[in-house]
Amino acid sequence: MPTLAQVLPFLLTAILLTAILLTATPGPDNLMVLSVGASRGRRLGMAFGLGCATGCLSHTVLAALGVSAVLAASPVAFTALRWLGGAYLVWLGINALRSRGGLGLPAESGAPAAADSAARQFFKGMLANAINPKVVLFFLSFLPQFVVPANGNVPLQMAMLGVVFTLQAAVLFGALGWFAGGIGQWLQRRPRAGLWLDRVSGVVFVGLGLRMALSR
Picture (tube, rainbow, N blue to C red):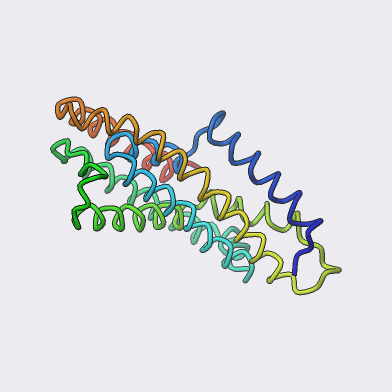
């Protein structure tokens, strides 16, 4: 098991690194959470953000089992994952471009459809993160730096550190979705503005998908 002396520096580094990535160099996950929160409201923005954070667990498992190292060492497999992730983001973008500007139901409505939409956004966020090849490489390079072989059971240490990273990411991504959702609540009273924001979100998703698929 990781010791407290391992976990505290890891958690501090993870929080600082995630915060820097959120503000200085926003990546696909950050931009997608902002887009969903702004265009769909707080409930769905937070759901998508929590899904992105939960997707980190899949990378944790792969890194702990050594699968990520094999994937990163195989150009064919890595390229296939890159194209799959890019195609998924493009598909999400096309759906946003085809939408009619609906921003979801207000939080106080309590309608079952809103809960269903939140669940769908959660799984969309989780899948978008899980098939992001750059996150595969991040976990493969980040987690081992805080593993202490002398403490035994290296895969278990990586798994526990991955869970810690996921929890802090859930807090930060959830907060990002919540604040972006404030824009969505304002837009609920302005359907035409919501329509154009959906178009902007669609362009963002398509652009991120093409960048992921074509990047080297």
